[in-house]
Length: 302
Image (cartoon, rainbow, N blue to C red; front, side, top):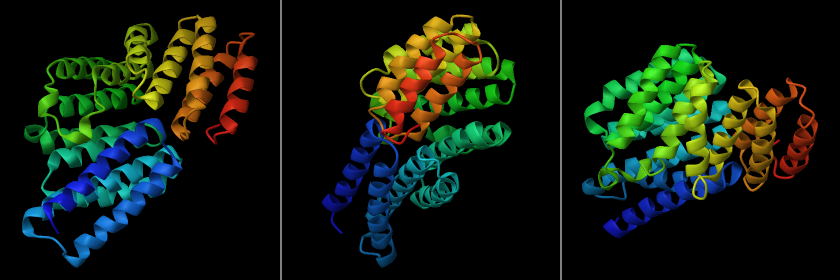
């Protein structure tokens, strides 16, 4: 196998990463799995030279991670876990601990949302310990941001606030030219989203609002799925601050954005905001819920 063919695999992985940002769900799963099957076949048949082995294993690791993330987005949690275990093994074969740390971050996010946040904390601490010297400041910021969120969901408010500050400090130290391709998404607004979610989850909604506001504004354009998350979590923070009207306005904007995606995560986030507003008895809650039901059922995200 020539260097140009290996580079072609790497370019297709990069394309899939970018597609995932704006599409999500089943389409990315199918595309990632198709590419993964080809990469695995190449590795099994040894149609490559020694110089290309690590790069091919890194490709396989990223394809399995992307397929796992798409499965997670679509609600196939068991499938996501199995794919991430494959990804971890491939990252190990590639000799790339930082790649493995990013896979653990994905696994930890699933645990923070749907499992035990304490498991997420354990995974993220393991990622920090195993890859600390191999990660750039940006990669460290991503792990710290996810860890802050896990602390928040575990009710460890002091640790959540401290680790959120660490993540913000690290992203301010980042040198994008030094970063590997897989961490392109970790920009300051994404860290603001982690920090805001961490503070909101730990009960400090007022402190979360500036972070979530910055995330919602900064994620416009390139990261529509993350922007839905930022807007809906900002809406929840406003509900808890007593401003249901602002939350409803954000909710309608989030529905319009989510309707452009095939993302279970986006549907989940909109539904969470709708429930929060409904509990207040605010008159606009029913209209928002109806808007979400009609708009998101059409794309399978409701």
